[in-house]
Image (cartoon, one colour):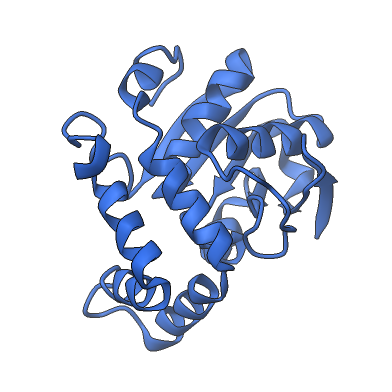
Length: 209
């Protein structure tokens, strides 16, 4: 486990594996909303046998610290850049799950030519057809969370699993997501709801995706 101070003083915790394969390339894993780096354990185990892998806890998630006033997608993108700068990564593939897909778009914009490609996992489903504003998917979820956070989060998390998801995996992910502080959950959901220029951001990226 390593850590680095992000642009606003928040401590960002991350893991590096397969450092001896750094010459083969670096893969960076970014978790989804209220998730954490531990949710990538199987992917890290698989890919670190051939590549250097970096799994990051975004601000307020997992072992990273609180204290951010704006849990926006651009601020999370800066967390990614900070880690890559700390590790001296010149070029990497960015992998983002769910909210992490939005984060890697902003990170790729900031990293420019240092990105070999971006890979989304269960993400950006509403890139072109989300109505946005108060009717957007994240905005609706945000209103529900403001009204009753515990109930809204429990219902949302429960809906994310397939019927055959192993109980151990389901419990590990559920416990981690529900344990994420309310200020982070609401702040990050608000950040997603307000990130309305994603399609243009994606179009402007000159990297494989």
